[in-house]
Structures are given as structure tokens and as C-alpha cells.
Length: 493
Image (cartoon, rainbow, N blue to C red; front, side):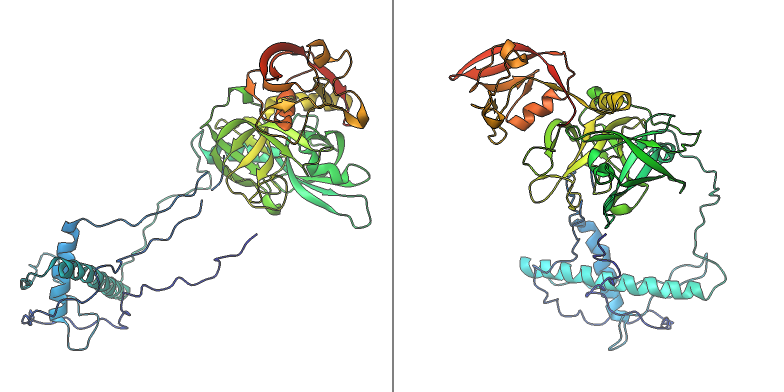
């Protein structure tokens, strides 16, 4: 966790003078106006104030917002300029800030304030410089008066502290607020500690959530992969209670895993599952997890895109995972993986799984959130979890063809040859039955545009084996359509 900007003193305003240690004695009579001071020589380009840009916050989700400088209306400059001029006349020689006016008792009339002498007309550039200088002086006087007033209050018996009245521990948040949704969901979200079975005991921290009352926990495969073979897993709830767990099943391609608590408590509350197909861009999102080990962290954002093809991993195939993801700007960091992405009602709509890193790749590297997080749609994750609980092995829908995984932008091309020199189109497989051949370029699958091999796999895996899907492809530059009935593959090997 970065400590940048922590513990640094805020620099003082260079235009404001230092405050006096004790309040000056107010004059007993209005001062005699002095001759008009020379006009300020401050350059017309001198800024009156600078406002720092504020960084973005996740989500989501996601764009940084910049707080710009606001120009004060001309009417607001007139009074400070007159007040500054009057204050300058009242100040003793060499003194700063000028003494404040006498404060009358309640109900007493205010002492008359002599009007400021009219300033001589200047050229446009000189007038702008004078206005800027007046604004700066007025700011300095305001600071001095504020300090003086505080000193007078300190000597009295009253207090300037404003109490909120009652803030009981039983204060209830309105249903539907982020606080209410988080309070209900947090007891069902867990922090997962995974350790490998090696001598070094390497591992990591991730997140999961209660899937059912039998003690099943859904998370990402990459969260528990290090402990899957001979390692140890522990699960900690938001109340601090920990339980040992074991892997029920893992799906590397989907990046989904299911754990089972040992000696699971009887009061488990599964999180409700939503419908990710009905999610709309702009819907509110809430992410819960343990970013960088900070358990029970809640962040918010929106759905910033849908059906975003994401391949997470090392990019070389094999154990890579593919998803047609929900994109959110809710802040997601390493440690959020496996945690729930909730909608505004508190239902799970996705499993937080990957972030866009500044290096340009997707994955679970130690990059921080830049407002582009990706979640596995819960409808897909639910199907995978049910299969893992039932058999311990994942089942993948397939088209029975090997596609080029490197080219992008022109669709997914069926390779000339398959792995090990075998045919790229499985004989009598789904693609072969649909009439597809090596060299065909699939451009649309189930109504979704296809720009690459990973995008095609992401879309295929949103379906189930046996689904009939319409495909548009190009052969020798000519478009054609066909329908493929998806086959299946069991396991990750």
C-alpha cells in the first residue's frame, strides 16, 4: 500500500501574512483617510489561486476528475477591494495585518465606515492588475480577522463546536444505500489465505463468497491454484472467525474454483445470485474483497461495458482463462480476485477476476487499479460452480476447430493445421458438421462480433454444450452463415 502524500505538511498560502499572536487593540475613533496608495504593480497574469487536480476512484466499473479554478463574479471583487483599501488606511505604519474594526455590543449601532477614496482611472492592463492585487489583499485580511475572532472566542465561556445531537450505535442506513448493502453482504464474503505444500509455503490472499448453506465457497482458480496440490487453505469471515477449507473443483479455463469449509458453521448466509444477462451499462456496482490483504474493503462504481473479451494469464495459452467479462470502474486490486461484484440490490452479478494494467495486458499482476476491472458474469460462474460441485471437473463447450490466437481485427481464422500437425477441424466434430474448413474466418458468433481467437473462445464459453449458435464466416473473401451445435470437453487437460 502506497504511503505517498501521507504525513506531508500542507504548505501555507504564500499570499497570506502570518497571524498576530495577540489581537490588536481596536481604535477608539475612525481613522483619518490617508492618501490613496500607489496602484499595485502585480502583473496581470498573476493567478489568484490554484486548485490541484484530484485523482480518480475506481470502477469501475472510471475517469479522473479535475477540479478546476472558479472565477469570482465582478460583484464579489468590489466589496473586498473597498474593505482592503479601508483596512490599509487603518493599519499602523509597518503593521500587518491591519487591526480589525471595533466590534459593537449586541443592539448597538455600527461605527460609520469612511468610504474609500475613488481610485483614478487606469489603462485596462493596470486595472486588471489592481483587481488581482485587491483580491489577494482581501484574502489576507480575511485570514487575519478569522484568527482574531477565534482568539476572542477562546477567551469566552461559549464553545464553537457544533454537535450532531444523537448518533446512536443502532443508527440504521436506508435500504438500498451502499452502506446497507455492504452491511448485509459482508458477513457472507470471506478472505482466503492459500499456501503451497512446498518448503517455502508460498501463497497469496484472495476473496470468495458463500455459495450455499453446505459450506461451499466460490472464488477464482488463480486464488487457490498454489494450494490445490498438497497446500493449505484457510477462510476468514468478516467477524474474524477462520475455518480450514479444501478444494472441491477447479476450472482453469473459466478461472473459477469451489472450496468446501471443514466444520462449516450452521448459520451461513449465501449471497443471492443475480442475472448478469440483464445487467445494463451504467448500473451501479459494489465490489467487496481484500485488496493487497486489506480484508472487508468495499468499493463502488458502475458497469462501464459488457461482453468485454478478456484473456487473463501469460498470453501463451495453456492455463489461460477467457471470459466475456463485465467491465466496471469500481476499484479492484490484487486480493479482490474471487470476490463478488454486486448490483445495487446486493445480488451477485459477477466474480471479480482481472484488471487492466498500465503495461497494456490483462491479468493478476501487482498493478494497481486504473478504473478498468473485469468480472466473470455470474450466469456463467453459476453453471461452472454447479458442475464442479457435482463432478469436481469443469465441462467446456467447443466447436471442434483450432483457431489462430495471435491475429486480431479480422475475426478468428481457423488454422491450417492443428496441434502436433493434426487436422485443425475435428473430423465429424461440430465445426465439420457445420461445413467449416481450415482458412475460414469467423466474424460473428451468436450475434457478437469476433475480432480474434480469444474473443471467439470467450463467446463460446458463455454457452453450454448442445447449444445451437449461428455463425457468420468468410471464405475466400465471401461471407456465409451456418449453424453449429456445440460439443463438449471435460477437464482442463
